[in-house]
Amino acid sequence: MSHVTGLRIASLLHPRAKSRSFSAIACFSTLEDGIGGGWNENCGATCFGMVERRGANTMRITDLIRSGTFIRRNRLLILLLLLAIAIWFVGSRNPATPAGYVGYLTRGALFGKTTFVDLQTGPTSSGRGWLLDVTNVSVTPYTYTEEFSGDRSVLSSDSLKIAFSVHLVWRVRPENVREFIEKYSTLGPGDSADKIVQIAYNNFLREPLRTYARDEVQKHKGLEVKDNIVGIGDAITKRVQALAKDTPFEVRSIVVGNIQYPPEIVEAVSKKLAATQELERKNTEIEIAKREKDKRIIEAQGIAQATEIISQRLTANYLQYEAIKAQRDTINSPNHTTVYIPVGPMGVPLVGNLNLGQRALTSEKANK
Image 1: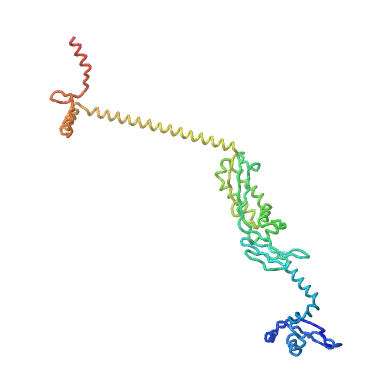
Image 2: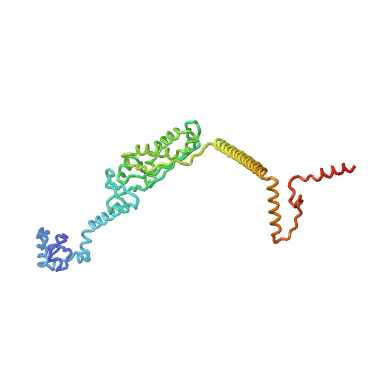
């Protein structure tokens, strides 16, 4: 009785495969009882020859699987294959890096140690791979603020306690993300990108920045600090940039601001300013009074000079001449105005002090 003694599966890429619509062929031989058999090692074209010669004993894989023979005889193999596929899908990942970040890509291991794979600049992903993982680091600028207030206030060169703030703008150099992760930061499970950067900043930049800020402020007198904040900021920037040279830290700028003095100093300065303003007001009033005095003196001098000039010109003959002109103008005026003017001989107006009271008294004494 014939039976199948061997089963092998092969995918044959043969020109005749397309013409016969074969994607895969199960080649096996059937032998009589007691006769050995096996797989034809010369698969390829030879197997196609077997298909032609043994059409009754050869079937497609799909037909073989439908028949249940393949599944029954290779159940363990199929289970192992499915298990391997499931494990690969569970253990494989496709880590992504968003825009504005650079990813530090690593590959884990079931046995051994995790290894660095590559850097990837977002937006991108690595593609699905076995035990891949990524730590994303932002390469956009950060702004950190250091406060110097309360117990952390700084004494100026004249021992005045000053509170202020220092604002640092910096970022991680994209090409140095690997060095940044491996040498300057401490990673923990589930750490966010901002926390990674914060830890590195605290480890490398924070304390030098605070030291440089104190040094530069202490070089100035207390009340002069607010007038030199730009120069102080530039000096701190140069020192921090020199420290960060050839490191993953790119320092953009440092600004000093929010200068605050003790309340008693602020009050004293306010009173001094108020007194100064009051003094300036008084000086302004005095100056105005002086100008008014000078104005009146000049006006009086002008009046005196004018009077002197007029008194020299107002002779009796001149006054009579002016009186005649006035009478003529009155006569020719369209207004009917009557003017009574004391006149002397020939109708010429009298000029001088009439002193009528003294004349009346003299006349009364004469009558007695």
